[in-house]
Length: 318
Image (cartoon, rainbow, N blue to C red; front, side):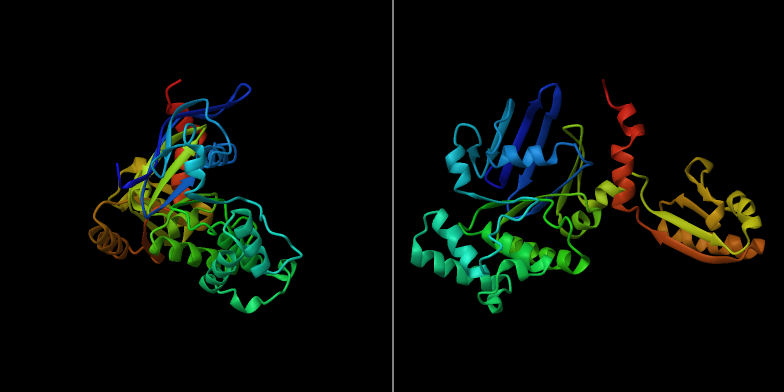
């Protein structure tokens, strides 16, 4: 499986009586961003720690960059980078000093460490920071430097564990741009996140994890299709006509949701353009004035709630 960077089959990990990983399966193709979504306690961080050899799994077959994480842990470590939830930088040192320090810790030697530090500072747009201490960096700059530090050894696989937690929109955008650049250069990225927009923006494929297992996987569009495909939203001007609008529109009653406070009805559709023209025509013929008629795809928020909510858990086998 030369095109597969990460293979996880039946991974298990327990903390006392709690199953953090409960037979989790996952495959990540080389040169892609694979997003892992899940609520708090779903097993995302445990998965990253197992993949990066920081935790030993209780059971399962787990390979990263062609090497077993238990039997060949040292070989795995030579081929990976890890960016955790909290920065691992010396706040008193400048960016170049931090990167040179990491290079020396990886035993690159003094001159190779300086060369690599200069390469990474240029790559992440930090060459003009000089010797300014990291404590004076913005959140986005600090995270970009932390990302640069995780690439000192030019890893084949990079693990990003909720890399933009706490950043403002500008800081998140800076990190996203850096991740896209990495993947363009051939790096494989496993990204755990609770920001659904982040997964939608970055990930080629997404795995939704809940209770230590993957409960769904696919592209963002494939996951969105699990909630019923496209939807049409209609906002009527007069709330008193909402019931009449629901009755005359050609949608199955079971799929229609109504929000009287917002004067909104929403329904699944299959043929987007036919549904749109049919709705507009039916409303005009009935004399019902609409303030807005919108075709949209389901959001990842809706997918996430659908797959990890109480209703989904109730359908899972015991």
